[in-house]
Length: 518
Image (tube, helix red, strand yellow):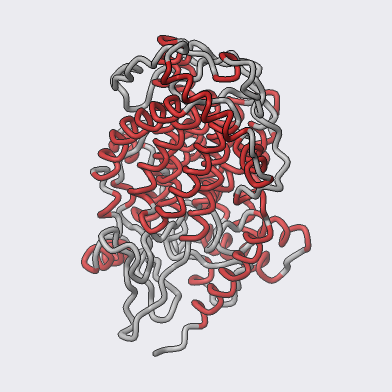
């Protein structure tokens, strides 16, 4: 087997990332993280009228009326809660506290954990070809999925959008049936989470868990045992806390799964499964670029790794149609034979050869390479850190995360369209003296994925949190510059990516202005 210096370097970066990941507990839902229990200032009681993503209406799926609170069956459910509360262990109390921070927050953390775990590029086989993960045999090497940035952005979007739709439906039925929470029905039931006047049937926590479970069966099939373990713990915590009866939980799980089925059906037909292409397509990309008189991108690994998801631009977006993806394609980058290209390559060489402590710090903060939760996950983490300060209801948490992640998913589609249309070489391919300060991605340079993802996220977050001023735009600019400082992008890659990302984010803003939640 050939020695692969580039791959060995990548493995070292992966291991370093995993060490960081294992130490950075806030990214994986560590129980020691001091989030306050969710105590919304506004329960958004009208959320059942908000505009869903895929549902035709909030009542598309029927939820049967609950039993009255004066029936023997309901009394038995209250007794189950009292039985739990009479013998809570320290582990039980820790579980209740952990999940009290909010279902949308915690399940997003779990999803970020799964992305980081599965964001590992496959190693080559003895014949110097690279194996591809298979959803039909997810436990075989390489484990399905390889949760690279486009895949991860799509995963965050599906889970977030399904969760939002399921909670809109849940809010409709909460208002329709208006069954009070157990601790408001029976004063001998302790409220181990903040009390709420929000009806408890169906359980919002169960709705989130039910929707997430179904999507993760599609997206992370090798991790279902772990996911189910977390879901069981979550549901038990809600019953022990006095917030929900078992029938609240069962109704919520069923509703979440029914809603998620619509998103699973979409996910099976959104063309993501064909995004890897084949050798004929890879060769055509090279030929078409050279026919234009340009130098084409190629993998710098030995053996050369196939390009990452060259047909991801064909994946169905959430916020607009596929024709819009083409219409949003940026102008071409500087020709590889132009003085501008030479100038930009020399600029990258300067940053490669003259690192400073501050620039290296920026490079590594935004690296988000193998073994991490990717740029989209980084922005989810940023958003969650801000949203916890706002005391949102679960349904508003879900709506805001859906807006953010649909924009991030579509930003990936738009960016990959530009990358493989122009097929532009990386700086270190143009000048071997350029040494990157971070891992070298296995896809073309123009436009910068980090810049596109970041500008899309910043645009959405600035709309949702206008009191933060230019905070998110400033972060997006820094993320874009980090790729220049790290010597993996030309300046034009980052500048064009910021423009494209902002355009994508504006589609999410337009949706936000018309979804009924403002």
